[in-house]
Length: 538
Image (cartoon, rainbow, N blue to C red):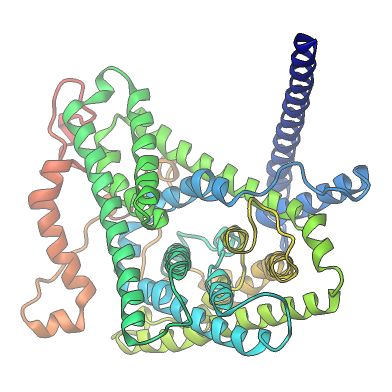
């Protein structure tokens, strides 16, 4: 008898596992098919005036969600449950690492102070603007069991921008200055928002005094500096190992895999140490592109460039696709359905706060930045300021992941206030991405017509057969070095800090860093090494 009971239980367990496996296979098939559809349609709509791949993926996700809702008779709109752990551990690292690996380093560090002011200081201004307004407005609306800490989290959630749509329209060769500002600010903004959100988790708003605020700011600075240092250390370690061992002599595959694993290891170490994985893997990508990439064989260089870009592209498409499907999640809308007017009102208020919070720092900080510039070519024009403001109005997967982290548990919630905040976040993300994303191309074509797209202060990159393949991600390493006047006084350091710092960094890099860690022209020739002796730079 006991044997029959055990056999029956094992049979039920086997059926359940078989059903689960079948559901997983169906989900994977569906998502792979949808990804293929997104890629094909994105190619067909490449020259479209209104749509781009991000919006196409969102629309396909929404349509798929509607079909699933109809086939399940309103029970579900997606085949996977959104997991913030899945997002932060597996999906976000390839995107951020590729951003650092592909960045034009000369442009990025030439505008580093402006990028940092927009990405860090600007995010803090946006955070305080949205948080204070949310406390003042939402506390009177009887949303649910939300307190001050939840409203502060809302400020961090909606300070995270998503400038993918704008970057898909801007041309890095035609508008290098503007592209570097939008791109750099977007990465620093995401890192700052996540660091700020994590710092708020241990912040008690009921016990606010000067000491608590100083501790909060100190923790924020510690996370930023420590995360950056870990990323730089990981990149240098990978460069040193590959340079000394010449792994490419025996297998180029090992070189590529080692770069990928060490980049991912840096991210996971940051998460293990409660640091910012975004900052860590971003600076790891910058260091790897400056040192490690030059230590590998030519075939590994081509492979790594396209492998990182491909991973980032697939993950971004997957995220937009899933956001579109998850927007119709019946569970969360069910708990917020008893007050649809309030939900629409909250979404409208949040969207308005995003507009105001963005404007609160873009135009003032641009004005302050222009005061430090000596020539008109170095200043941020009024039209460029509008593009920068517009680029940060869209919200994306980072905002949704942070909202799920704060207001759900394992992707589910049954609290009225939490459900309203989740649905409002999804609404803002969809509305901002769809509306602002559709208007991005016409706006940029109006503000930056083709005749003036080029930045006269920056020469365009060469359009040769190999330049998109080998030079688009090297930044200063593959560009002709410009003559730098040695600073003769402290006054020059104050008036031209970026050029002065770059001059001393170049001397330090050539004298110590490149001979030790490798880099273009500094990899000694050895049988099987990636550098041919005929192209060694003295």
